[in-house]
Amino acid sequence: MPETAPNCLKCLHFRITWEPATPRACLVFGIKGPRLPSLEVFAATGRHCPSFELKPGLK
Image 1: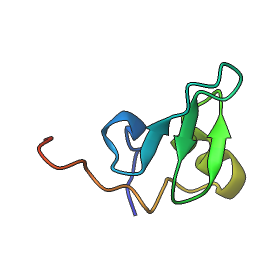
Image 2: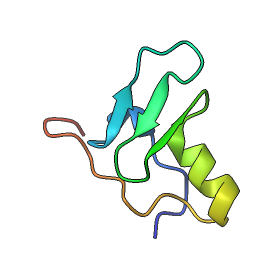
Image 3: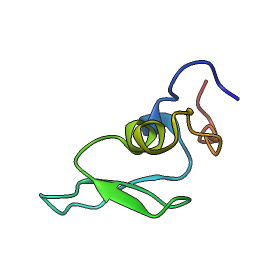
Image 4: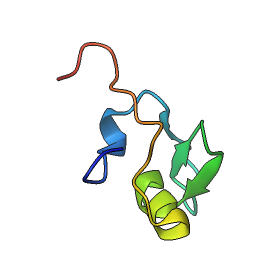
């Protein structure tokens, strides 16, 4: 389990929806909203996102 919130922008499952009201999305959790999905997961569960996967080619 990660000790800090992962950076959704570097996650394989993160998507931009291009919808003004819900611009950020997570494919694993089915979350769409104005905040980063990792913040929504933490708010709902009290734990940092367990599904973070680094996009290929990133460090």
